[in-house]
Length: 288
Image (cartoon, rainbow, N blue to C red):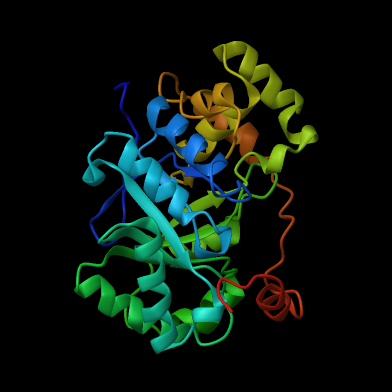
């Protein structure tokens, strides 16, 4: 197997995305995110995933600038927050993201939540893509039901859908639905948010021992072999380095089948729960 096998994935718009990204959700701005992103870039990551509602885009931008790595070699994802949905709002939100990042384009820009004026916001993203301000556009937190509600209204099909996904919650129905349009799943919480019963599962422990890897590396390798883009997050330098060290081994088909059987079909976050959109809007304000 090639050492760089599966390191990048081609999206349905022809753009390439690194299969392993570094997520910065819940890492504070003004230092911690800056340090974590620099550590990740030194470890070999070339894909950083942030969002307006993570409140740390400026640290991400500064770390990229100070890394000494050319901007075009780093894949940057950010996300539009609900407050800025609708056509005019989305243009303003994108402008704010670009300003905070200190960049003239973003590689992938997502609609962070599937509520409100999705179609209006999407139209602004399509225009920004045509203008070169965004390379690829996508969505996040869309279940099969929500996908069927919104995506038929959109002029172009999203390149990705970023959702919670790990061996206990493999999003099988959603992946089946997205396959026909070659929409890629980006897995957040790919390690089950540090779920001990997942990390210590006998199947995963046995494979870790066999391959001389840790449980997290087995899980991430499984997801990448399933064709997903994974976004592990950590502030621990050893874990940051370890989470990208998954390209020197390959799980056998029988082992993949064993891991597929761990699916419970249940995750932590239910985007269809009543009032989720209102609750998120009330609790996260990206501007006054």
